[in-house]
Amino acid sequence: MFGGYLPSNYLPIVVFIIIAIAFGAGTIVAGYLVRPKKTYPEKLSPYESGMKPFSDARTPFPMRYYIIAMLFVLFDIEVVFLYPWAVVFNKIGLYGLIEMMLFIAILLVGYFYAWKKGALEWD
Amino acid sequence: MLSFLFFYLAGVTVISSLLVISLRNIVYSVLALLVAFIHIAGLYLLLNAEFIAAIQIVVYAGAILIFYLFGVMFFSTNLKAKVIHHQYPIAIIIGLFILGEFIVAIYSSTFSMNRGEYTVQKIAEAGNTETIGMLLYGVYLLPVEIASLILLVAMIGAIFLAKRELKT
Amino acid sequence: MEIGLKILVPLIEISVVLGIVLFHVAYITYFERKILSHMQDRLGPMEVGPHGLLQPIADGLKLFFKEDIIPAGADKIIFSIAPIIVLVPALIGFAVIPFAKESITIFGLTFKPFITDINIGILYIFAFASIGAYGVILGGWASNSKYALLGGLRAGAQMVSYELALGLSIIGVLLLSQSLSMVQIVEAQNRIWFVLLQPVAFVIYVICAVAETNRLPFDMPEAESELVAGFFTEYSGMRFSFFFLAEYANMILVSCIAAILFLGGWHAPFKFLEFIPPTIWFILKVYFILFFFIWIRGTLPRVRYDQLMKFGWKVMIPLSLANIIVTSIVLYIVRG
Image 1 (cartoon, rainbow over the protein chains, first blue to last red):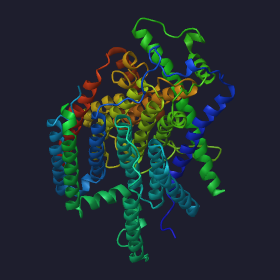
Image 2 (image 1 turned 135 degrees about the vertical axis):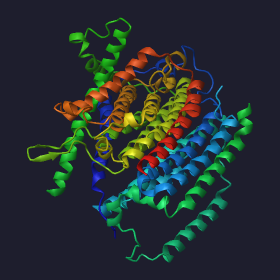
Image 3 (image 1 turned 120 degrees about the horizontal axis):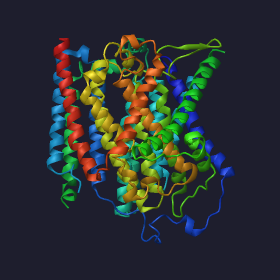
Image 4 (image 1 turned 90 degrees about the vertical axis):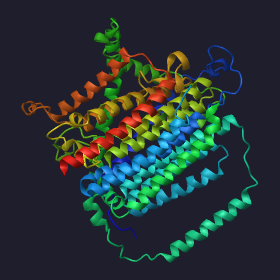
């Protein structure tokens, strides 16, 4: 049913992830047994410099964060293309070099467009 | 062992994907999608595609889903949008269409033993990332450049749409 | 038996690494307080143990026994798991760090100087580091507090922005090492450390690493003077300490990566210094970078958030792209 080998190098990573989650959850659960639980409304109210909280805490925020996240996705994909390129750089010769220069140049067009339109500005 | 891992990963992927579309709280949906993406990366690992597994997490979990999260937080705090339910019929039709496409694709592909030039042994010798690099920057020169153009179009389109907001 | 041994050795290694990392995390907080104090002509912690050496243990115990408050109106589930989402990626990154040169054999069991060596080591660390951002954003969102929400948003945007330049800066190293495996990157620096061949990339990496770990002068997400404590304003007790643990574990992790990618890992700087064990060299390098982190915290003022984002997008990203272009062209000419 499955061709190939079990990537056994990754097994310790899986074990590590499980241990790390168990460590985190275990510490909190163990703490739950010993720590005090005395709550009253004033203690539970969110911090707002000593005042009673007013209006919804989930306030609207600028669209810029959203745009930055969007630009990040696009650039991240570009970075991902660079990894396999860097690893085989010695083998692919001039073609590979020119191809990547073209790739970066095309994305720089978008980058400078974003710059010019003020997507990278914060005020 | 392999089958167990496969069924675990596939099972969690399916369950968390179902949770993504059925959970009421949209932030929980994002978290369920995160779980699904990580388990899909595990499935890639089982297929010995370690580079794709890493990219699955870097791009989907680390970038696209962060973008969703910002989007969800942005729209849930800024617009107080109501959940739209009258799109069900259209969604079901599109879903069935895609399902049909998958079934056709699966049945028309041959699960034969000859798997072309790149066998597991060959990739293991050359290295997964290296093989992908050689192919991307050798045989598939043009598609890579087209990919960069698509990214450019996406970037310009996104900024164009957001331009009005940026001015204010 | 085969499979038992296969599990046992990594289990021991993971426990040892986890223990060492947590120990160093605890003592980095101590060193930070001590170094900062002495930079400001103070003494720092002195009461608990000689020269306050037991202070981290006292702090840990105190936090463990503190009440764990979930604020009213908070999203309980996400509020509870956000600290774990932050902590786990910070810890598991250490799985691929090579601490020394050779394996050691104890009781017939061979322990490699790393938990595992995978072909995509550096990508693996980045992949999981990017998941840490969820914990920060969601922790801020779930708290039902304005400060926490703003801190989480700022942290998210800052982390993703600097992640780009960070990813781009190491491409130069990968061009030289021709591998993504941490072990092979160290071995590629047999003759010359990459910091000498990639000084620009090193500077970019260190700046981005400071920003990624939300340290001063880039600690905008938790800027005390504007946002109380940023995304973990509402956290207390053990969950609060997880954000702290994660911050310091991440600091050690990025220092380890800097030592491996740029400072030659466990390689000695000169041939005649090779009598000092490789592990000592590795630890020295990591502590050198950690000291640098604490040093700039004691020296530099915090920048403004708009300056930080502009700097990331308008300086670091073009600079790292230029570094890649120059490096690849020079490499092509040199290697013919």
